[in-house]
Length: 70
Image (tube, rainbow, N blue to C red; front, side, top):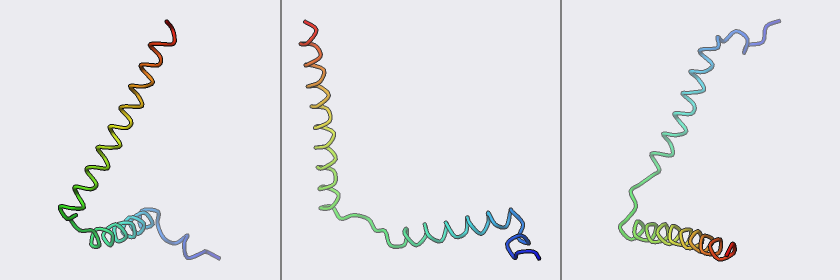
């Protein structure tokens, strides 16, 4: 006895899967909104602080590596 899933061709399965993913992504996009100027400023400051922190850690490691071999 054939299972109902065996009757569906492979290309239709992928189309249904893609359609389902598209619907999920579309739902998220409908909920999304443009950040306010205040939200954007806070995000930018936090991102800049993170980049600065990573740079300082890298610089500290570089300086330590310059001192150790000498």
